[in-house]
Length: 403
Image (cartoon, rainbow, N blue to C red):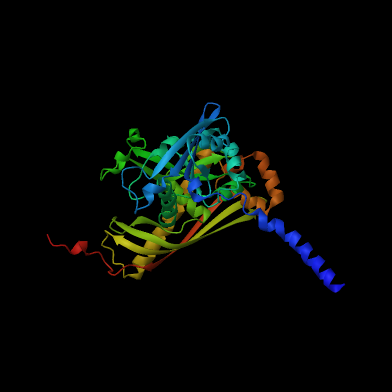
């Protein structure tokens, strides 16, 4: 009896396990069946979309097999009524299926960005292929197609070049503010906040238009330059911030990892300081029933270069330089906020979100003014700078050069 029961149970278990063993990986695709899309571009053309895909050419990036005669990427373009249809059209032009799992950048054309980015982001976020670690960037005075056609020196893959340029410039200069798709969506739907995206421009001769000749000169005819920010209200582009305003924006948002800038010595000549560590505290205080925003920045800096004759081993000189550095940071923040509020009246600084999170009832009253609350909202700026190192010499040798 027991043997029969055991045999029955074993047979039953085998029946349960058999489908799992036979099913395999039904969605599996071999690498040689995929076209890896690194750069994805979206433009608006009338009532349709122009979708641009920058795809890797495997034979040209494999150093052992590349003959150097072709381009490392190829660009496919499709004019479609919906963005999703481009993925199906791709198979009509290629023997491989497009794969979005390795996208590095999503480039949005200026015209599309001004019309609204919400509808096109929906299909990207619904797809299960793309990861969330790629950056979104807006093409200034250009289309996404034009940007993705430019071949770049040093980096074989232009989309990689854009990705790492955004990453490096953000970490070392604070002149950009890269954002990934998941953070962008979170900010778009957040209460009391608008978004800002990094921008890219084509510098030079646009007629090269994907030609490999752009790589055959020590001075490329066309290049991609990343700087500044695109300012949005809801999901629509309304304007731009320059590099200085972007640095101020990043100080306010607490996103400065490193940044360098000059202050004037006693003789009026520049002394360059580099911020090594910064932190920003943002809080709301209620004064006489009204919200006030307080922004406080702390920075540790090194002196990296000096054209001044100031004696940097003098404690009084160091204190004066720290004060000037504090004033510079405050100026950068005030200048950026004035431009954002007075010119664009868009809360990309997230002041409304701060009020909503700390005083939700007060925010309900404020948001009735739409974003006009920004123009009457008091904002107070503070900065504290500590000079950590002055370098290997305490005074520039330039004053000792003999005539």
